[in-house]
Length: 269
Image (cartoon, rainbow, N blue to C red; front, top):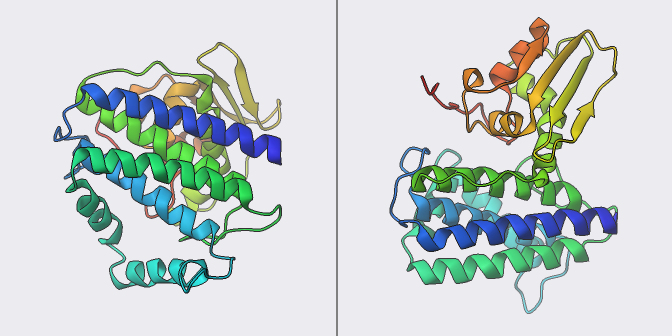
């Protein structure tokens, strides 16, 4: 588990560093595809989520001088319950209003603090979250997915195109694992037919899940699949090929992130 977690956290650190480097040449106020969110809001959201995840990782500990531990995590949950529809956006906008250098410095600290907290989490201990409790590895995977996806939003605002890397395997894995959730969040049953997923990585390697002889399948670019499950591209603008009605329906509703169904992206043409 330590090797797995360290590898995940190393990839997360690389993704965060790459995004931070890209921010040097991006207009902080440029609008991104997320309605009402500019570049600053995207970074602020990543910062806030890293900080809250760090609190969650420490929730099992005894408070120090009356601070931290379960009480600190519970305070966040109570705030979220008080404004379930607007809480996350409100936190992002509040932090985004701070000076740019302050936000960047705080984001660096939050990334380092989360890494330290996850590495210190004892094996078998799960941290609370807004959904089901999560292991350190699951949280690292989720943070990678979100960092990568929001980085795409920043690049969209800048009109740039980041070079895909095989680090996106974490997003692909999460996208496959959340297939059942995607159907559940739409109030639909998961199709009974077995499914094979074969994705071509940026390096040319092929990543696969499911039995070779499954009657339904999804095949194509891992990059397009990852953009689709994070709802950063419309289905028709990918090279993904679905065989079977269940596979096709999944690609219409796929989402690797928690929460209600997202609006997705409009088709490019």
